[in-house]
Length: 467
Ligand SMILES: *Cc1c(COP(=O)(O)O)cnc(C)c1O
Image 1: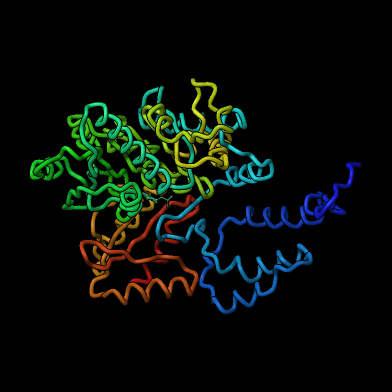
Image 2: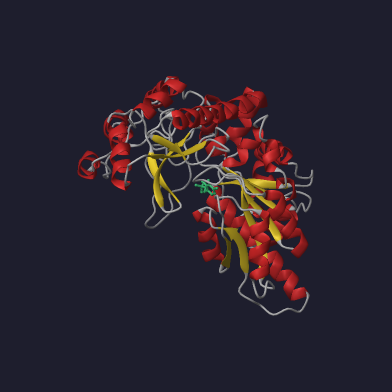
């Protein structure tokens, strides 16, 4: 027994009370998890009433303990069903999720084992595993063997961390050449994801916007826009999107890469959603040029079938990222001693991090990459199926042939409010979750396919509601 210290901080009577193993609570939670995992098709759910929800949780957290079963009941009966199931095969809005069972299970291991994926010192085994998964993604993109990266919380975090490296690498080069500090610019298309704009705001850079005709960054327009610009000396990077979120369009990556190389600019590819399309046996050519990226983002929590939250951020030369992102603190020196290895914490703006690549790693190994290729092809096939049905329906108009798994369409005669009412009706009936979008200023319908359990019958069901 330790000695009782004097003063105001007596040893607690039961230091173990929050940390003891409770077989009953464990059983409850695992049973719930097993039930959820056993569902072939999760229901769409969603639509919570704020007042009702506030009542459901009112006073729940107090000074005294509560029964785990009672709290879990509140979650199951009042909260869970008001959370849209992004992993429902009927979820066609935004970008859906479809984590594999293996990835979900292993995510629980990551939690239960408190894996802190910060550095080699703390988590060598986790870093090796995550790097193995990153290697698969990096090889798919055709990046060199020296490429490396880290899993961050999302595409937004990945884009931001990459653009910080682009900025500071350019800044260092400017200083070395005796050039003055300037506010820098980054070339982006008008279809770049909102997180890019956000990252530019945060990093104090401006966008040099290249207009798109059909939603795609094209080499010709890119070069024209640049030649119309009076002074490009403040430009430091080009961002291209490999799969725009709104329409699933892959930019002309080869042209963007060439332009970046000619000017000595950083080339960043945002493949948060669409990068996984490279897994398809039929689409790889569309990504020509991605192998020249200085940095690339792909979200496992989107089309790589992993749980939230996870984005792979890969650098052609991780040393540049390390030079920018390594946090300097004397108590951290011990984790930086081995200069050969890249600590995950040194490659983005974070320090402590969940080893969030492990779920993907486990699933890749357990399922094999052919299963991933097939799952991506299934989404592509569904999008083409939906596009063909839309194309043959006189009431519907296909906006463009889908490159990836997003389908945009117009319902002839519908206005904004009609699309809105349509989405609400489908959600109310639990037929599907769909949201409208915009195309060249016009409200349009948008369907995204990602889940391997989505069937053509489900697609027909949705399209039948457009009559
Ligand atoms: C989803 C998406 C992002 C943002 O990713 P988060 O994981 O939501 O932060 C960035 N770019 C593109 C192209 C996306 O589709």
